[in-house]
Length: 408
Image (tube, rainbow, N blue to C red; front, side, top):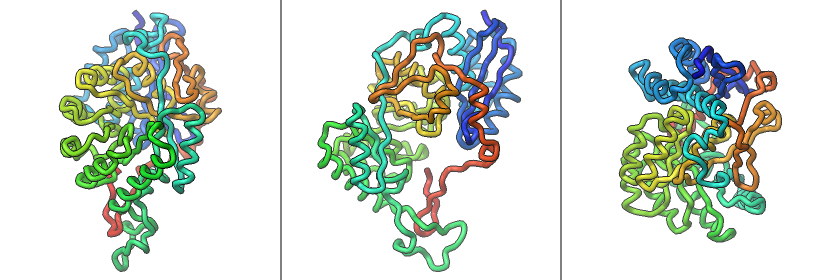
């Protein structure tokens, strides 16, 4: 069996936020790659892998994926943090890549074999006006996409007002002042109006979703889900922050709007009650953020017994390796629901030979052994813009009219 001889972290993309983990073995030419992407705490993940995980894993049998996962998960005593999880996830994905290459099979074959011919994805449609949003959705529908996420502007824009119109406190200044401020009632009114407009124009054939991005207080989240019920969404995403998951019980009692949740989850105790009590319809965890293919596969199996489907999170900031890892779990799980699409620039695609192809709303595996994707280190290095990579990155700091921060 191959032994781990080295672990390397490759930073790429212009911002340096894509972290590709490369695990080398003592068998010539046999290595695996994984995704340890962390948009904001990038340097912390690099340090965790290079200074903490790497020294304890060199010399270990690369085939012992479950044992490596379990012992690495508890190696620092405290666990389930986002940095720890994604560092472990990158290594775990790389180990599955090695195992697939050794077996001469795609990873999804090792997970039980295919349950479908390809992976349906949903597109991201945006528009500064309702007409522009409708046009964007129609462009996807005409290309064959069946599922489309609808955002009236950027995240939360449906609830943004010019600060002057919202009547801020006199003399408001830094750090509280904003040119545009978030108003929950406006958000709810505009989102409900948006779907009323879209259903009138597009009918009920297209499968439409919306991402709230945790911007609402719990009672407002309940109200929104209830008001959207007549418009038959495919799902309403992240309507509550992870701190308020108990309110999913109130939503379930009042309406049948399908709910997707989990983008911010890293701890099993966050998603276990939602699954076991059947309070959500789709689990939205990111494969690398919960600890890689090993844990994502367990989450998917758990969901099957409670009637919950998978809808693994991707988003525009994640890398091709994480998308590929999610695709392999998607292919092998009967209770798969939908996959978030992710698009990459031509130069980014060139840096990842074997990247899965998305055509007309379907993601297709290439059936090569392992993950089926590789990294061209020279091209990956060329993507990096050192000045941009050195800048700290933080989540957008939206505020209400009085200056109160809105949790993302």
